[in-house]
Length: 497
Image 1: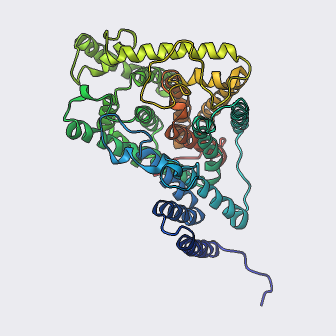
Image 2: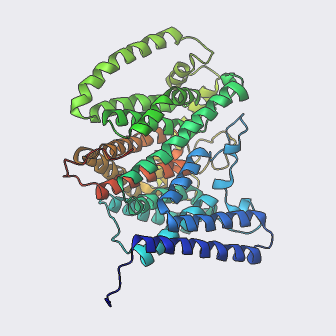
Image 3: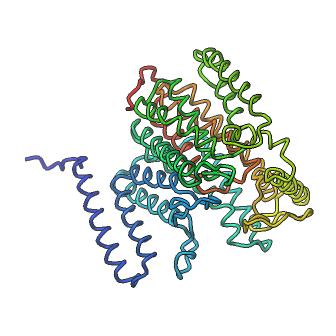
């Protein structure tokens, strides 16, 4: 009889995970009963965290995919003129606003921390594998250091701590996910799961958007500013380019057909979202996609674009002067950027943004090197009209100039280094990877990051929680694909379904 101990099999590991899940759930239940003493909100949050801890220890990627799906489905902000359950979720509210217990963290952050802790314990005591690292993460770490410095500078200069947290916290969602996801992506199928987690909820959001249009507002689109949140238009825009990439690389057929068949709904919701800058970003993204597409299909894409552009041109001419109606709304939105109707909401919005830009440039000149720091107002050389947004004197629409004003030229250069390094890394992998889904992911991640910078010059989405989770997932998948899928294996074919 051999004295050599048998190796720890996968079945042993599975049994251990189940035991840990049961023990952690039991300990959590006992702790909740004793410690929380009937506080319903804290009990729900703690129970969710305990459940996520068990799920994350057992199936870490499944726990993260579930959380990402929730983020994509639930809006962060209320939509003016529309009541919705998904816009009133406590997922993004600090527990201070939900209970008398002071805890400046929201359920999203608690669940992210829970998943990270569960993975860390699993990695230390079960897996003990080598952590995966991808070179643009050095640029991300430098950007994180710049954010911490700017946060500290603002605090030392008398900035408001709560406002500073509001300004900076979303960036750290991106940073955490870019480092965490490569550790969780272990198979090609895992990439498919995360892509589905971030895209399928947007199909559901398009169904919800059409319901709001036809039922909630009864087709009276001129009576509301939008039927979705601001960021949903951007998510749908990226989804359109993902669909194109999936067809170009002929990959992930089940997901490709699902997203393609839902295209009429998602496109209609994108139009009804009424985000002017999203239309411009779509045009720029189309040109970039054409330039970045594989050489073998570039000519066919250019030829296919000709009739599309012709139809769009005729449509624009036909409705250019129509002042109302859903059919002419996209053209009215684009025209309002440079030729708004006098006295209209669009004209007031343009004027407000012009004042913001002037004040931001004044602030930048006054604090050119290191910026003001987070938590401080930007200069109000020209007073802004009051709007129903408590942070409008801290966070302007122009998020690019905002970051320059807050972090100074040094931090601003680090930000562009972070953007450039991650875009270059994704585009380089798009050429080197042989797996078609990984190439589609790399192309979508690069396009999404570039288009976000364009949109953020006009809209304050750099501080939105959902946007930074969105980009963290895509950049994490790029890093995961770089380590998971060999770049020199020409035989690496389609294995994802």
